[in-house]
Length: 304
Image (cartoon, rainbow, N blue to C red; front, side, top):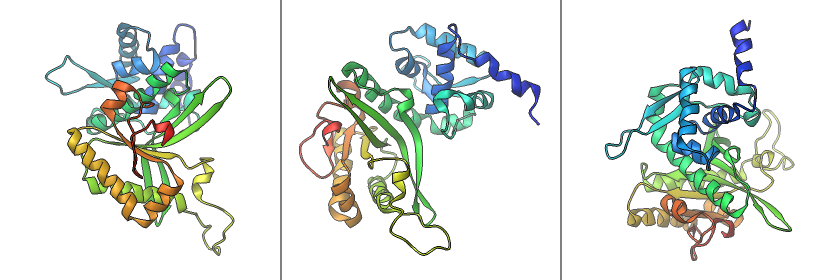
């Protein structure tokens, strides 16, 4: 039975002229798991003040809907990474921006400390695209970036993208919708393990689920067609090491494309590229910063 408190709690979150930012912050934390004050400001109110965002976050914390962990960085002032409390996560289930999306909130300081570095790097990647989209008049906002999207690849295994990106190029006479699986690499795993992700995506490209107990048919098609009209391009975004080391990891990705037959087939069907996160932040993803994994000169991600 639902308690009266559970029935009445969400009414204070109904959209009103006085509280739209509060709702958006709750939804953004539910969507992106963890974000710093400055990241939330860039995501939701790029023209607003830091004080405005801090005021909203502190009110959410005092109401018990959000909490924060302090990032360990002795060279900077105290930076807070925010996440939803269990009560905040419950309140976001019915928000329109999140309808139909499974919640994977981080709802404790311990969980936040384990996932903060990687999650914040993924948010940084999103903000690089979002900032570029605003500058160019394209469409890419907080709800066009879905973290931790998982798909079956058969034999009880799954491939999980750090994020799926939806991006719309707009011009005077056209609109082009693009999608990408995003892999953010902080150089915390071996280069070979990173390159193995390409095998997993190659398996997803070909995987066809079969009903249990039925003979295999050729009519269903690959399972990815349930979610995407075109198989998303795959973008590796690297950070956390010297440029020489990152260049070596990109070379290892290219070697996997050249040497593995399944990945070679993937590369003929899907656009694959890699870039350095700091370059995307400084110059924008639509600059020629992406190394095609099939070889060739760097180019914009839209031209891979």
